[in-house]
Length: 539
Figure 1 (tube, rainbow, N blue to C red):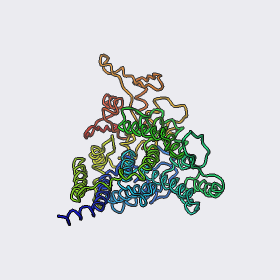
Figure 2 (figure 1 turned 90 degrees about the vertical axis):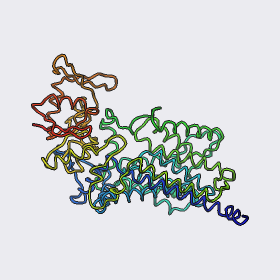
Figure 3 (figure 1 turned 180 degrees about the vertical axis):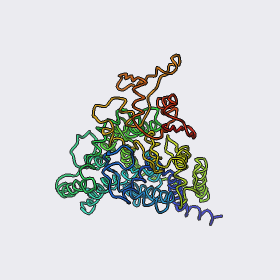
Figure 4 (figure 1 turned 30 degrees about the horizontal axis):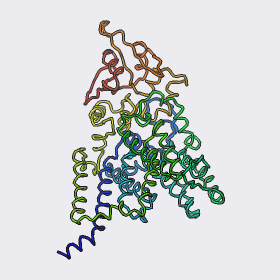
């Protein structure tokens, strides 16, 4: 018995290490199956087009002729297309799995994981970061986060060591960003502010900026990174894309989840409040560094008010967690590895992790067999989904077109249009409407009607007066507390002017369009239904 007791005590830490890596790997494997998103359905066709035809100057996927386009994520699109062309969804799964491993690697490096004496706590913080991130799929936001962490880590290592070799990562990350996800290149310079600009200080906050000869050493690399912005196939157009998108007017009327301000009903609101309390406690105890203070304040501001808040807010949490972790150094009672549990309990915890991940995969009905399909589009065609829009019901509608009208043009809400774009059909607009909404409308002075039709997003209400035989329909939309009323005839002329062969709608999301198509049987006929979707053919 004494020898058994000695074994359990001696090997306790080893089994905690097993628990750590099994837990992390299990979580990564589970998340790796959530690689699809509606945007992937235009990213892959875009990458394929570039591989086959070069860089387009006009949108090749819409039946609206002459619409200029900037493929701001061309490199990312090409990489996804290459993986998908070779291995189909198995290739996408491999790519996402490797991206998640890279996420953990970069965050661990930021926390100096190898030198840490409390690795389990760092692993826990990293898992929380990934959960809060919100874009744990093959959208390019995950790549942007990784590039930002690499840049931040390089700056801090240069600040701490004075070695300029780390600074080569600054122009490299900007070069990758401008070609893979140009809409976020500005953030690479925003994160420099707490390190380079002497921002106002508060009592008790230690200032850890870069100044003097270190700043002079850094300056050539900063200038070089600015030059990297223009090394892309679209030149200045790619650099200005983000500003053009923000001024296009799209955000003024589209209801996109990640563009919405903070709401107490958001599933992330509880986390936001809890982490804010932690921040205030650290501020009160004077434990924050200046970089931690300004990173948290700045990116939390985006979380509370601005667009695309989740990936940026995760950066603020990363700095807050580092501050919290720093408080555990030298405090043995906070080191989880020191808890003396028998080794069989550690093994049971590891097994439980594997079981729970397997159960989650089963409950979520993840089709592992078809994810690992290397010979067909079956999974993409049948199971594609994101947080709010399921595509599986669109599969039979696209099959109908394959059998009856393979050269058809399709009008649908932009998320659904992505699916038909993936299936090879010309659509009205996809998920890049900011690039050509002005050209479709023909003017910068849009009417609400032009907005709705140009975007393919019918979120307004059509009020029906049945007492007048459905002939007195009006379309109402409230923008900035101003009521706009369009007659039924005006709305009808706009829908007719689209000139699509087929219209894909559902009653919940497209009530006005659905009722118009349903009422005008002399112009449109419902030829197919699938789940919540109906497809009308122009007669």
